[in-house]
Length: 571
Image 1 (tube, rainbow, N blue to C red):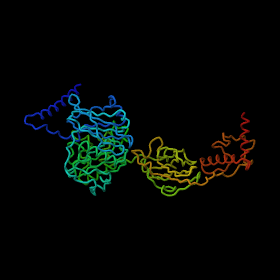
Image 2: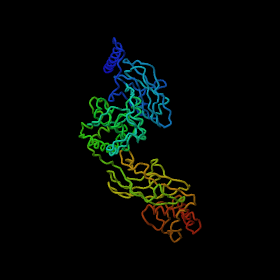
Image 3: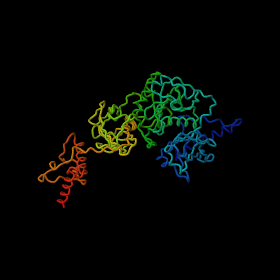
Image 4: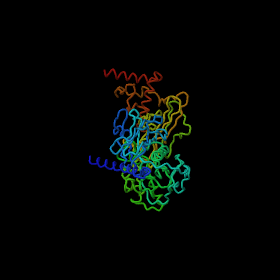
């Protein structure tokens, strides 16, 4: 209660100050409010779980927790990710509150200023200066929201300046050499920035507090729209961003003053990780641990920028957002903050599980690979272990992807399971190459059959998971064309059994399975070769083939007779 009273006193004092300023004798009107500093923007983010947990039912609406705006606010903005590209935009309304929590004007609908696919930016200008703000979403629409970030600010005043630099302005060659893709590559709007800041002596690390699994270029355009349309900033606030795959992107031109740490932007290069890497509020936006590839590539960028601007890398020159004086934020999130030493040192341990493609005996996906219905083709894929953990048979598997663990139409007789073609052929330490050997069997229906594969450490992780080293789920592929021709008949094996190969009476009756064939592992007197797996398969297929042959050579009749004899004896 004491904290709430103190808050009310501060808000009331601010309101009285505004009124006094408006009513001072000889004053032409209230002094304009200062735009909200970047580090003091009142903002809240919710994933789908948090939205339904924290928003309060209010009739046909769900109301967000009230957002305090102690510096005043005249605009509410929202950045949403919906559950589908064609999903209707949920109804959103906002209003301001005074120091006593009374409404300042009616509820007003937010209007969409930008949309691409699932991402939406919307805003509304409030009727008057607010000292707190409320937002609500139609309850019937809330299920379509996967992410919602909203803020209440005094926006930067509209700029009448001509556009200073087009979105296709050339990226500095020294920056491009660090692996940074230009603004043109992600389709940036033209910047309207004019405040230059050429002398850089420090860097700030951020996270965007958004999902990270969408197309990076679209996400960048959404963040830029949110910064420009709702806060009135001249451009996206950060100088550089990094996407989940480790790709570096140019944000605001490094020649301009950034907008990422309020009161601490001068000489400060803003670098932001696309994603949410905090210990709370974003559990449904994986990964919450920044993948090594992001950390490693940002470490390289920091080192390159330090060389370019003569910055001595230290804990005072490369900080997290929350480490700056006056900052009241959790940014860049707990999980990313603890990787700052890795970013400064450039020493990043390799992921446990990572592989590089080496070779394959199957035709490449772009080349013809034609089989008749039922035809088989044996082959292999070879990959190099570039992670930190050793691969072992029975632990490291080649597995189906796109979707993961889907039963493959191309599964051959030697597959471990319909979604596991093979395990690695031996122990493969880091730096060595492993082979995954398996057989493709064409389906009975003609057509195209693409099949993607990935690696999985059973019960631990997929190699393509965030934080691991790949390959991605859509890289390794075998593509088979099944021809419209007569199917290939199964191999009948070494021939039918005759009476001379059948155990005599003294040997006892041969056990049979329900199909009239020896069970797995029973030697039927056939030639053996190779390891136990293929041999057992051949035995089963040959015995069944002999039975189906009927009286062609007598073997089938003899086996059926033996099976009946066993049944009679058991009865």
